[in-house]
Image (cartoon, rainbow over all chains, first blue to last red; front, top):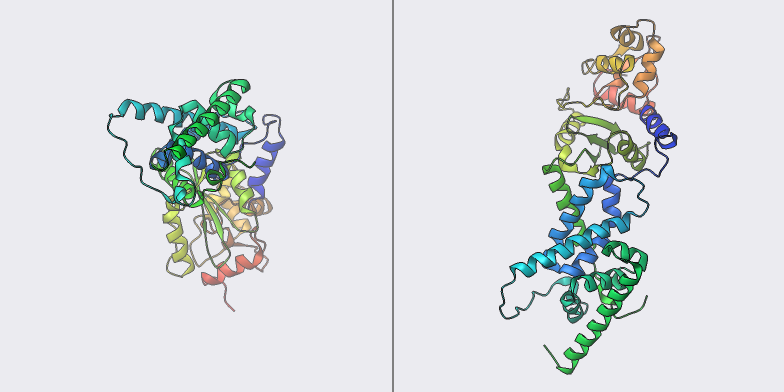
Length: 181
Length: 202
């Protein structure tokens, strides 16, 4: 059956018009990157909004996918989109925010067995520092990729991650000095 | 890397991200961004990989061709926007199940011929699609109906490369000299399908 079909595409693979590595089918791309993207969004926008941001991220990727050329680092590409969505999301939320007393966030499975204070503290960081911290320390991305996701220089990415981590430690110390929440 | 972020790195997001990915596929379908939908459908002749576009059923592949390679080929030949979306192929699934249970003798699905070369081969496949359930024809006859009565061998090649086997019933074409002849998806499947349809007895 397939020999005919295969012959067509194998030619494409070796042919002159397609020198770069072929783009994987979107199904493969989605399967390969869904876990890190979700992890990034869970840490940066929280469990209540991670699903929405996830959907926006991959739909934006799908929209751009057929025109994507010379992309060797698809992980960095999709995390760049996710970072933009997380930052936009933070801004939209800030605009909507009504100054009421802080409501306790509902606990989630993801946080329950971990360190809920840390999750809250990370989400309290300024957007760029938060993104830098999550990319670097939670996803273990190299600084070159962190910089790419944030759209800044590697030095600036290092600085954001460093500042963010310092601020986190300060917040946590305050929390511990305060005893409990 | 050891640091205070261990709990965030270990958080189990497998299930949540899988559910969210399914949401992406639903939204992509609704927004018309799903160029090719693929699904696996179980059958007595093995797990079939089926693919559809907005125009119709475009591909049925036996498991002998590796499904991952078939999907790669679809991405290259049609569009990289290939999604695994069983729901988009529910109609095909139902009809194939009915066919294998002996409750259906014709498929009522639209076909997308994008993977069938145009010209003679395409004409052969289109003529083949009209051979009724339970009967058989010959390579020579298909060549004749495609407009080249002497091209029986070329008709055989076109049928061997049928991108939509079972639904475009190339198994119903046999040699005029006897026997059931060759089949791109292994001869045992051809025999199975012909027996299922009652075209082969004994």
